[in-house]
Structures are given as C-alpha cells and as structure tokens.
Image 1 (cartoon, helix red, strand yellow):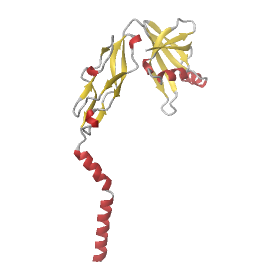
Image 2 (cartoon, one colour; image 1 turned 180 degrees about the vertical axis):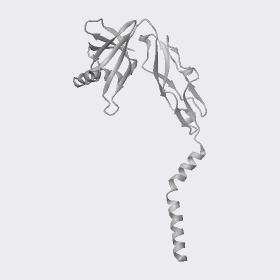
Image 3 (tube, helix red, strand yellow; image 1 turned 60 degrees about the horizontal axis):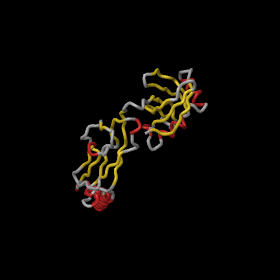
Image 4 (cartoon, one colour; image 1 turned 90 degrees about the vertical axis):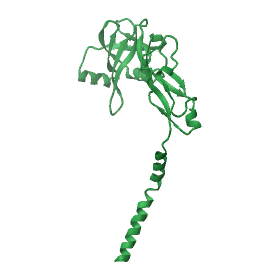
Amino acid sequence: MRKEITVVAEPRAMRGKNAARRLRAGGRIPAVLYGAGKPATPITVDPKQIDRILLSSTGHNTIFDVQVDGQETCPAMIVDWQHHPVHGRLLHVDLERIDMSRKLRVKVPVHIEGEARGVKQQGGLMEVVTREIEVECLPDRIPEHFTVNVQRLLIGQNLRAADVPLGEGIELKSPPDTVICHVIALRTSQVTEAAEAEGAPAEPEVVKKGKAEEKEKEE
C-alpha cells in the first residue's frame, strides 16, 4: 500500500565497517537502493524513519518515496533490514525501487475474526498454523491484511489459503491447500496428565516419608 511518506536519503561514498560505525554514530545508517532496471546506489538514511515504516500497520509492504540528492524521487519498498542482535538498533536496510505499473509478489498477514463453534460449543482448541500468505497484485492494491471469519468451524474443520477473500486484482500465490487455522479436540490424556501433574509433588513426599517411618520402627 502506498503512503504519503518521503524518506530523504544521501549518497554514500565511503564503505566498510569503520565508515558504517561513523554513520551510525552520527544518527544515520548505510542503505542500498536498487531495482527498476537501474544500478544499485549506496545511500544513507535516517533509521528512525525506517523503523516507523516497519512498525506501521503496513510494515515492510509500505510503498513510500525515496528522495536522493541529485536524483529523481522514486517509489520504493523495504526488502531487507538488519537489527543489532543485542541492542535492537537498526543497522542496515535494502530498498527496492518500485514500478507502479508492474505486479509484485508480497506476503500479507491473515487476521482471524470471531470465535469458532468448535471452541465455544464443543470445547475444542483453535490453532493458527499460517499467519500470512503470498499474493501477486499491483503495488497500489497491496492490502494491510486479509481477514477470515472462523465462527462456522467445528472440531476437525479448517480454513485454507483458498478460503481467504482476496479482493479484485489480487492473485493467490501460496499453495491453495495451505492451512490457515483449524479446530482440534483436546485429548483426554492431556487433561488427565495435567490433573495428575498438579498433585504429583505431594504424593512422592508422602510415600518417602512413610518408608522412612517404617525404617525407623525396624531399627
């Protein structure tokens, strides 16, 4: 989905770890802009802008404008990024130029709506198996998410990728039989084991104590 966001980038001449450290110390991070039949351009961007895009409702599927000094402003998407494993700070990002007239393949989240009959009436458990599906569409038609209603599902039933309402101009690329969610029955053995586990600590102590008392009497 295209948003009215402009990321101001600057050309990057210096490369290497030392240059990257200096950039980050100055509040910028290294990035690369490529795609649309044009050469890759090393640039620097503000990590706060990129983080805001990644944390938005459309996330990495957000299409925004990139403005590079001395170059034409172009629409782009975030295709790869790297965070520090400890501090969580954004370290690097790859941006791809987008041709708004060509279809894209993207992964879109699937949200679950409603309470399944198999859970409410039959005591089953709703299990989500897949949280996103891959689709192909024009950049302007990329949705924030898809929604599936699970109210009709009984124990043993499921919803698959083919059941997700996509909308006009959107083509499913994930396997149609990919399970999105299903309702499963709780095993009786699981309930029994859980109940036994709750009383398990007390029983061995009593047995142990009884054996100790018998030993004392024998002595």
